[in-house]
Length: 346
Image (spheres, rainbow, N blue to C red):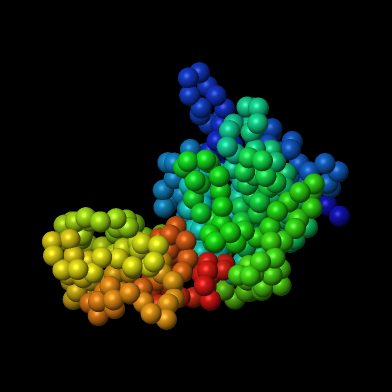
């Protein structure tokens, strides 16, 4: 049976080549990437490109364009969509597609490359080949990422759980080790550990009503709001001055590993900011967090001041989910609603 694969080229290292003293985008890589199909597979390729950028240049508008481009494909005639993407913002775009295409029955697998395809040792060919093998055998709805770290087989990640690339060793991992599985010699093996969804659970992600609405919204141009102030988890944030500089729709204070943030009073007081936000009708969200039978007193102080604590998820998922909820004018109580298994502790 012929497997129909549509490849979406967006640029990135996988779509680049050395040009003089730098590495930049080229179009010759398209044909080369398509040549790395699984051997012996009966495949029919189509391809398109909504834009070509180095992924570090990606904007919220590019997330919307990519989601709209996929939603606009003739998906009834496609078995899987493979998105060739840069590694710098791969985890972020995977989250954006996870939310923008919520409930859709389409299999979307994103791939990148640690080096241009023309360079020895590039993992782009393996990522592409194994992404197709996974998509063809599993036929699951949702957004996934295929990536081979050095010395390992190709790992399949849920887009909602993928962590950004480690700046120190250029590896990709899933939060809490909850990658979905591995591809080796063309065969897929699920990572059967507690907290990982089964195939049947993933198959249930497709929801005809939710998916139809999401795809229609994506074709029209789903919005990811830029009016979210994101404060890093670090001491000494001048929260009041940052807050006063722009009419934000919401403020997100990223939490420390224990799910906490500074709650003391003073010039750099998040507690004061939470009170001001409550008066102004602007949500202040703290997270991601983890449930605890004995939470720290700082959490109680911030809750009393009006802060809302987000559930356990990756930082990138929380940022993108908030931008999606704000952009699509959904109530922020939907933060607690799982989308693509983005919430890690249930």
